[in-house]
Amino acid sequence: MTGKAKPKKHTAKEIAAKLDAATTNRGGGKSGLADRSAVDKGGHAKYECPHCKITAPDVKSMQIHHDARHPKIPFEESKILNLHATHVPETSKPRPGVRGSLKK
Image (cartoon, rainbow, N blue to C red; front, side, top):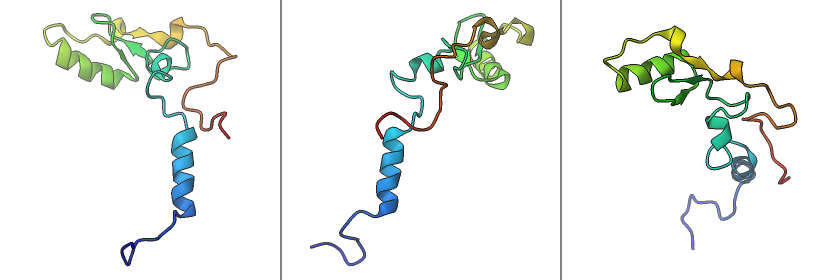
């Protein structure tokens, strides 16, 4: 016996949300490791810290990282490595963050 306000079956909206969550590439886990580490040009991590080699998606995030991790070294935007400028795009690989999957 269920509560008065609880539906007994799943709604179409709930099933569609579960299907979307299961089949959409969110960029996490082992499958998104190459995307986050900027191995390919399509990766989200565009900039690399010259001191500790950690990656960040934009200059502002890199400046926040630099202020937190390297406070004694002055921040110079010209020393940040742009990983997208050094890598050649691979056209045969799918781009990161593309909705959908092969499970349909």
